[in-house]
Length: 200
Image (cartoon, rainbow, N blue to C red; front, top):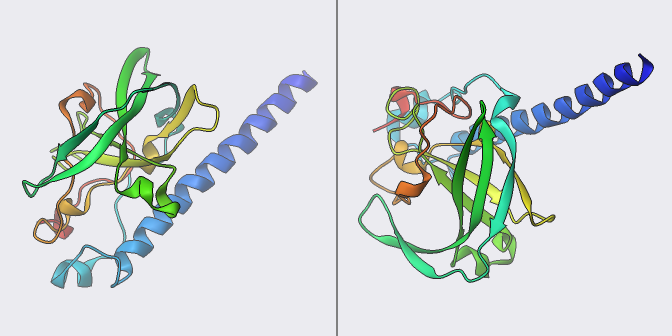
């Protein structure tokens, strides 16, 4: 009985920490879009912006995935929304379970960012899911990750997924297009939602 109670307390503390991380992500994203130097919003879209709409926080969408690193990554050009391309390499694959089904997503590393000290451990996960064009941006969403310290697992928190700048300003930005292999046949009802007021 006592150990069961303690286990519940520990779990509650862990959940509280995870929820705080997600709320910080939401606050930071709102601050970025309210900052005139950082925001992709222009004109009335910026003037009218108050905060992003988010799905309710759901830890079901925070998963620990099995991670397999690509030991011989080949550089490739990832097409962007403007028709240009950006240089990436496939860093590895993350496999996770959601509602009893298994899914795999490819994680990428920017060849340009990896040369910068600030972003040398930065990984990029673009994905699409069944909420696109309904509750989220039709072009999909992004997630920023760090190179996992353990090596064979990586935490994917879809509550911290966001929409590309191109969803808000297609004129000034060119954003990587989600590769076909990263299209999920499931609804990921987490992270930023689409609000047509702030998009063009």
